[in-house]
Image (cartoon, rainbow, N blue to C red):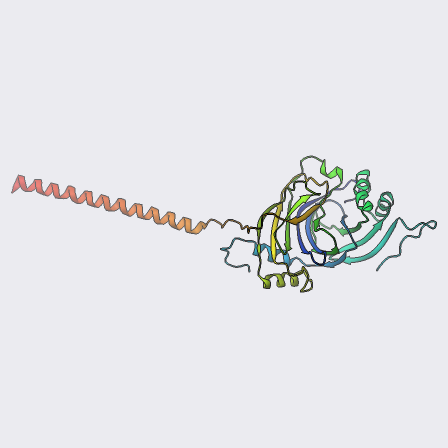
Length: 325
């Protein structure tokens, strides 16, 4: 969400979702890079309940990327007061929390009216449009909270630190819904969304209740207890976060534009088999084999020439003996 007359585009995006089914608690960690010409911009993240906000750090993403490499890898190695109502009615927008986290100014908002929420955001430097008001409405109807993030942009490319949002939910999800103006803007530059999902089994995703999602599982398997413990440490989470789940699935979504008509909800997959990336082609070995083959062929050719030369030489000697012997 840039200011009027400015643009901002998500260049790349990654998320880690850690799901504790027993506690009905989701830990959602996200980082992204942006292209923009704005001095500052913001984005909104909806959650069913008030989230706990914290900086997560970026190291967890590199760690998971190492885990999901092919198996033959060498190593993996201030709370704010609510606006006072004009009368006895409750405030249309309540600020549940304001804080600075991972370089963002963040505000957790609760609203009962989409236009009032739009007005609060506009007053605090966020853009306003009928499409955004329509985007707010289903979340307000479901009594979801909206967390507004704002970041200063001092360069055309901005990369954020990872932010963690932990919250209660009946079903794990990725916030995928976008305003109609974004989804119908025509062909967009390709943007990769990568989601790491850690739970007690292999999960799959749908847009809404059962809509097809372009996110493709590229890796899925159990990971070692020690790796889970180290991941939680890198993500700055308690050692029991996630409820002990050890099954990691990595998804890649390359759709453009995204079919962002609803959230991506995750559920247990019917297919519980493991999935791995194909091993990389051993290029140096292939070159060595190729060179070996070429050398062998050359040696055979040279040997054949020597044999032919010897045969010719012997024949000539026999002929000379007949002439002069």
